[in-house]
Length: 462
Image 1 (cartoon, one colour):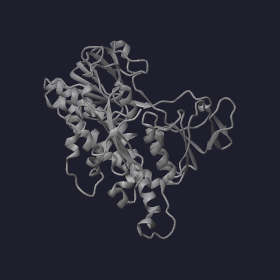
Image 2 (image 1 turned 135 degrees about the vertical axis):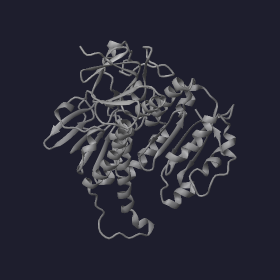
Image 3 (image 1 turned 90 degrees about the vertical axis):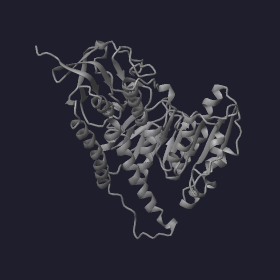
Image 4 (image 1 turned 120 degrees about the horizontal axis):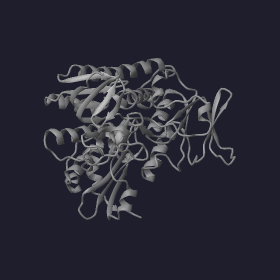
């Protein structure tokens, strides 16, 4: 039997954190192997951030063209969307990023790229394409995939996920989206703007239930203004094939409420790619949902094995995955003591206009028992939004009434995904909100209203 090939480190997966870690380790003189079973770049590059935001940009252009007359611009004839060209543009942007990751890795000194599926043989060895690889350090960056829920009748119809949506080059007549959270809402709005009828079906009582009520309502208003329909409190769904249509019955008790469309997108969450790695052979523990259990420095239950990115359940975003890489690399190579608990929750919802979120929600603040102050301003009172003709949404900031540190913020509106960082940076500095309140921001911008809001704080109600 051939002897195993020995490396200093093995990285499994080429998502956001894996390649950067491999490069950093290789640059430090370590002999590294990085393994990819499918597409270089992981979810973000292939089926997540990059392609979906490229599609959002095309949908934005279509929507702006339809409203050109509002800006005094005349466009003769109806606005048409060529879905094959939309997909081709998305493919080009995504493909360039994917090939960039692949060529970068294959050009690294001290780094061996292996294409195949890796499975553990022991805590220090994995097998790929029949070959045994050994290393004293193994890093899991295997990501996640769309969850397929056990909905009655789902197996009897054709349905789409966020991954298979990437192959759509046509316009669905009526797209039903099961799942009223971030992925579902982005696809719902973009396809409505492309020209489809869209109905979003959500099991809970409101869209994006993890957000505060006013954020959920604000997002709902934005989608309704685009003509997106929604059905909430669909606690018991049944899928039926009805001729050439797909019906989603929303009440298992026999009620008449239902959504009928031509195509179905299932967007109810993600599961980690951990079920086929042979983790039991290595002794690596997972939680009941399949996520690899890690400590604050991303070490698994087995010494010498780390889990980074979406497979560890400690963050579901590209930016948290990249931060995982930074934590591990700095701790290993610089003798640092960085940890996951150092980072502040921050993310965006990239509908148009977008939502930028940082820190705690109002509900989380109330549960914590903190005495807080909150400031809020509608985008109708933000000059930049008025000038651009994009006045949907609002800005909201909450601070600790005692130490004056910022607890959380939500900016739902034009530029919200960028302006939120002015707040986030102050939160990381652990500076009092008065530092930001007294800053002199550029006019006319969305961020210039942040100091104004902080000067109008009121006690957070019950």
